[in-house]
Length: 414
Image 1 (cartoon, rainbow, N blue to C red):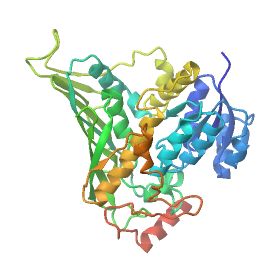
Image 2 (cartoon, rainbow, N blue to C red; image 1 turned 180 degrees about the vertical axis):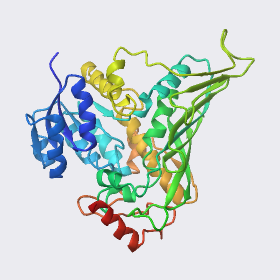
Image 3 (cartoon, rainbow, N blue to C red; image 1 turned 90 degrees about the vertical axis):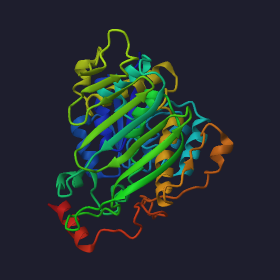
Image 4 (cartoon, rainbow, N blue to C red; image 1 turned 30 degrees about the vertical axis):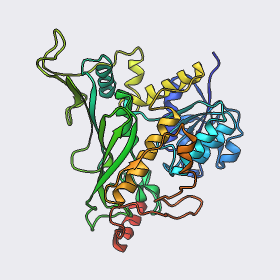
């Protein structure tokens, strides 16, 4: 089998992803980033025998089979569409679309293309989430009624290294990120485990800005979005976007008619599996606390990969889809990616309107998606100079004060 030739668009996170494809014996043939410093830094990992570009439209004409899309969080869609138009396969970082209109455009372009699209959502492949999927799939929990997901990632506001790497100028997207938009790490594992697709969403936020003496340019003072969905099968999900309350963790829970399974906050990868005493499987305990196993032939490689091994598995799944010439299963396919991204977008609107529920369109239905074809509301500044058209925060008047921004800029210089 010939080696897959892969290009990288976005030399920050994109290079971390590329390392996994190199472990899988792919050729990284081109890297593109407008930031010269990042391009230069990528050579340490990729080597010099690779083409380097600062212009995407030159990069996309390079001879390659697939592209890792890892540019700014909210600006993936236009570049994915260019890949579709050229028949290039896409491994796209989260989210797929920054606006509702982009979601419609993505799907229309995809339906004219032969490209494989894979949403690079890695959290379903973490060891505890894989184990919860196994438990749900064996049917012992009964009918799934309810599930929870929390992606909680507080950051020290005085952490200069974090800002220099991830949030390095005042109009950076992280400074205008609504709490509900960074959604796939909490929602993706729930869809993967249960197969349920959100059909209606509502949301409430908690406003709790950073200390007014901290160095920041963040215009979102919300600490968490609490999002609820009613799903196609009648089940309900409750989950966060990117939260920042005390005690960093990633926590998931799935509840059925007979039992429940969850990973335990603050206890590594431990799983708790519980059944109703009168409905537990033969030879099972009512409550079992245990460490899951990978049970994977590539365990040595997995354990050397990022995000607790999930980066390697996700890359491997993409290559399997390319090899078999078939689209991935939910939540990694494009329809799921646009649905998840749109849940985050519409959850934010729900919150701004006091929790009013929004219906999630069926993006396979042209008539349903048509209603959003001109919807370009965005909380972000664009690299093209475009400005926000909707508030990123539950308190529309909130913004960092002049002293905070001054300290933030000084932090970046140190």
